[in-house]
Length: 269
Ligand SMILES: [Zn+2]
Image (cartoon, rainbow, N blue to C red; front, side, top):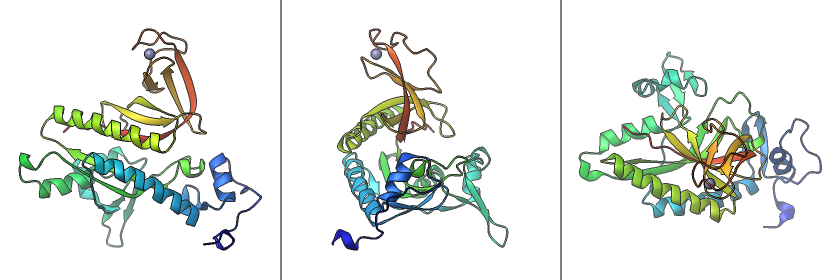
C-alpha cells in the first residue's frame, strides 16, 4: 500500500495536552490516537508494530513450552474473593455492577482465572508442569495516566502462568523464563537491566523486573557498574557510590528514567 493512502496523515503539531515524548511523537507520526487519559487507539502503523513485537514474544514463549490461549476480561467477584484480592487490589482494579446488582472485576491480571482453569482441568501431578499464556487487554485504574502509552488505564499485555509439582521445579522454570525475556529484549534492541524488585500486590517474595535504560520513564534503579547487580529503589538499602554488595569490586550508580517492560513473579502456593 502507498504511504499516501495510510490512515491517518502525519501532523506537524503535537497535541496540546501531551507531556511525554512518546505521546507527542507517536501521535504526530500517526501510530496512536488518544480517546481519553490512559486510553489509546492503535492506528494501522502502531498496530503493525505491536503485531511484530507480539510475534517475537510468542516465539520465545513457545520456546519455553508456553501454550497460547485467550482468557476473558470480565471476571466474577467470587473468584477474586477467594484470594482476598477483591479488597486488596481495590485501588487499581475497576469494579462494576450490572443492573441486577451482580458485581464483576475488569481484569488487571489473570492469576485467579488461570488457577480456576487449572483446578478444573488438572487431574494429577503427572499433568504438571504446565505453562499457558495469552496476549490480552488489561485495565488498571491509574491515578496518573499522563505518560502517553507508558502508563495506560487500558493496555495490551502478554502474561504467562506456570504450575509445578515442587518449588524447585518452579524456580528452575523461573530462571528459564528469565532467560526467555532476556532473549526477547535483546531481539527488540533494548538496552535493559534485570532488576530485583518487591512483588507488590502479587507476592511477598522478591521478583525480577526488566527495565529499559536511557528511556523517558519513571523508574529509578541502583545498579553496579561492573556486574549484573541491580535493585529498584523500593528495595535498595545502600547509597550511590557504595561498593557493590555482589562482586565487591564495582560501584553502585543511580539510574533514572527507566521504563519497566516486564516482570516475573515466583508466586508460590
Ligand atoms: Zn557488582
